[in-house]
Amino acid sequence: MAFLSKSKIDGDGTGQYPDERYPVRDNKYTAERIGSPADHAEVSSRIREAPPLVKEIAPREREHLEAALRRKIDLRLLPMVVIIYIMNYLDRNNIAAARLAGLEDDLHLTGTQFSTAVSILFVGYLLMQIPSNLLLNKIGKPALYLPSCMIVWGIVSGATGSVHSYGSLIACRFLLGFIEAAYFPGCLFYLSSWYTRKELGLRTAILFSGSLISGAFSGLIAAGITGGMDGARNLRAWRWLFILEGVVTVIIAFGACFVLPDFPRTTTWLTEEERQLAAWRLEEDIGEDDWDDSGEQTLLHGLKLAVMDIKTWILMVMLFCIIASASVTNFFPTVVATLKYNNIQSLLLTAPPYVLAVITSFANAWHADRTGERYFHVTLPFWVAVAAFILAAATTATGPRYLAMMLMVPGVYAGYVVGLAWISNTIPRPPAKRAAALAAINAVSNTSSIYASYMYPPSDGPRYVLRVILRKLNRRLDAGKYVSGAVVSGEGVPGAAEKGFRFLL
Image (cartoon, rainbow, N blue to C red; front, side):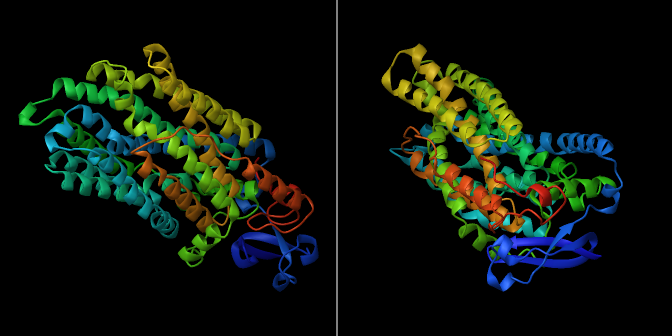
């Protein structure tokens, strides 16, 4: 009997690291069978066994324990990450409501200066995402890292309420994007370190509901502040909007430090049995460990693996197109204002489309997890979005235009949340590669928001090519051939060793 801490598969082959945590048994599996590179021809695969406390649990008892563990994780993790994302989006997009509350007039913005102030945030957002995610994977302390970033962006958001010139507004917006970049890709990586692939779609939708809820309530909050605080202490309403939301962000961030867990192996409020079960069920889902110790997590190696994987680039193009069409939300209060209602009414009318988007996103993600299907759950909602954009451009009548606005947001985001989960489903291991891929895809896809802040064309949806490639890779796995990042039948943990890893289509 030997022991194994991690089965590591990358673009070059496989490697084994002996340790005392998990026992494994030798199982000769030749290079000819798995089609691995020649320099690994003599490496014998090993089938991992469950850790001691998990191994002793009866199957029916384990089902109950795993359900209880999942509920415990959900209740501790999901409410806080949603609340943080609500504030992340409020602090990012409150500039649209500030525009209606007098920001442009007070700062004497002309031409495309307001659009530049919107788009410059995404420049900072783009620059920081990959370094931040690799750093998060390296230090392994999301419960400290993410709230710390939140405190900083809350301060920057509040400081935006004190700007008196176009230049200072640009500086605050750039810095805000630079710091906020840590959260969303970091949280996607964070969730993928706690949940299996078939649990991740709904949890990603729950996370992203934070942005949709913020879209629904930002208009209501802005309407309240605009109607009740304009001129209070000689400050315009738009300044109070930045200040108050920034203060709330900082307060929530301090509370998050005491609520969020770290990763399954390092969370102190789980029992030892729960920690082992939380880590082991992820291994069963993929076929290898999701944990690298600090000596194994090389930042550049994870980035290199992500860049060399064609699936990363296909997902990047897909998300780029989606974000381009979703950039209409950066100006949604302005778009709704074209219905010719007053400012308060326009802000109130922004809420219903986001409420509908929350409902449809949950339903679509739940069904995607239930069926294990991804492609059609990503693409079909976009046909609704395309129809909505066409309708909005084809008529000036109030009823049809507002119907189009009601369908724009759900049509884009219902598929988008499943697309986000598809990244972790498609590039699951090693964790450094997954962290780099999530950040790179999210960063590059958001570059569309830079130009889309000036013009946002209708989306024509993602391409079919990713599904074709994943199906081809699954056929290679069916034939017992080597595929980078996947566990072949006969390797890994029981369950995955029997059926092998398959990409979700």
